Length: 291
Image 1: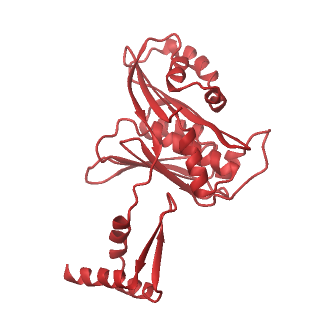
Image 2 (image 1 turned 120 degrees about the vertical axis):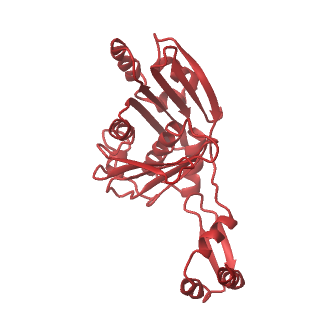
Image 3 (image 1 turned 30 degrees about the horizontal axis):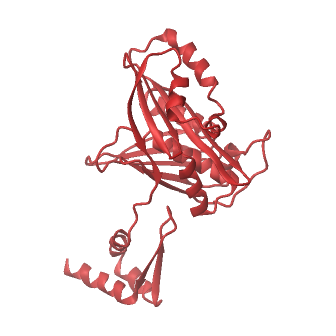
């Protein structure tokens, strides 16, 4: 089954839901960054969360979600675009902690003494950045709290990554938001539905897709599917983009780099390496002077 997202809304327009399967995305991230089991679960949850909150973006819009809770994993950063592409990395991918109550200790690895930041670049003069403190480091609870604090939207989030000896067995998530005019009488029904989705990765492992996740979240409520989008771990880096960044360096920095026969720049998101020769760097300096 491919990775994809489903977006739905109740017929009265007061409840919206996004559900995603991200098993392949998390598997690729694990392989690209050689992630430990705990790092896989933490980054996998954030990758899924980034996709869930990226819906509604258009054209060249991008979104960056960053978490640093003061835990041993350090920074976790994911970056998504309007086409369903996402990428991400963690500062210390090797970190592994003992199991906590029989489960991966994501909260301990991420930490809860920090902030979640969400930056949206929608093509306006300045990107918009919102932030909220972390409350657990478990990512799902932090995302729910962030949406309330930053956007005053009552939400519920469930995220999961199931890791086994064979690698990533299942990953995905669901985000439900109550919009102005929602029926308070439906809240108990929604909470009961959501309780049945708490172990979402094991549900996805059984073959349940985003359509069924939406159906379970909105059981007893009339709704319609808005759209379906394929999603993937895709990096937007290129040698030209790296070169453009190098040109912005001071001449002294470029001259110092020219002390080596070649300079290797590595993309944090995908690990791709780009090689630049002394002549390349010399051309950068020459082009800067011509501007």
